[in-house]
Length: 278
Ligand SMILES: *[C@@H]1O[C@H](CO)[C@@H](O)[C@H](O)[C@H]1NC(C)=O
Ligand SMILES: *[C@@H]1O[C@H](CO)[C@@H](O)[C@H](O)[C@H]1NC(C)=O
Ligand SMILES: *[C@@H]1O[C@H](CO)[C@@H](O)[C@H](O)[C@H]1NC(C)=O
Ligand SMILES: *[C@@H]1O[C@H](CO)[C@@H](O)[C@H](O)[C@H]1NC(C)=O
Image (cartoon, rainbow, N blue to C red; front, side, top):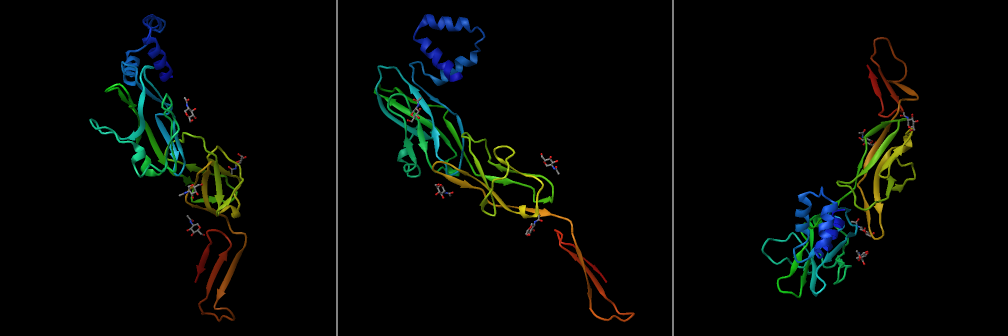
């Protein structure tokens, strides 16, 4: 929304009358907006807009950073590239020259207005800030799109109680450390077998009236076009009361008065009960 407004006002700047009108029709325009605009567009009309300023992505997935840039039509673009964590006062390096990125980085944009990029097979180490830079043919007329795009790479984790009583309901959640920017469809597994049980919400698995057979190792995963991610396993145990009890007497056979005997009660319950009576 701010972006749209910025470009509206930016085009208005080219036309004094239109600018007066937009200021008059929006008298409540706060000063802060003007400051933001100043930050996004320099006075000579160079600027970068990112579709998302924060991206939360799953490990091993591909991340698309959508981006557009503007500059006066009389300018020619000499160089476009992405960089990360620029150091003030130093010319930022081109990320595609970085061996850690060169194989995974794909510039999908052009040398006109689109600066979209794709980074594939992201790892935790890619959780950084990324910036688009362009250099024009006019001396000193170059631009770094600040603030950039903050990328957070997350893994999946199953949140589940350790035990549940037979017959009760239990809900398992597939969690990530940040809210995923792209919608994901989760897959659930019990002992590595995919499940078809009902979902509570997209990332939750609802087990109703839990049976003994529901006990096992649970994990969740996401399958994308060109990536796959699975959480580690979490053990869910089901507890149930005994149906039948056994009494063992030892030593067995004939017992004479005064002898000591041991009575052991055992059952099929979980956790199993073993009571000894001496
Ligand atoms: C920029 O290019 C990408 C990849 O070709 C495309 O998906 C996207 O729609 C383009 N964005 C704009 C604003 O044209
Ligand atoms: C389990 O969930 C179902 C459906 O939501 C509900 O009808 C039932 O009462 C719940 N059982 C328990 C033990 O909470
Ligand atoms: C990443 O995704 C690829 C493509 O689906 C898959 O072959 C690979 O096993 C995944 N790597 C990890 C570490 O999950
Ligand atoms: C769950 O069951 C496993 C295997 O039977 C056992 O090793 C583990 O200690 C149990 N965990 C809990 C919390 O009862």
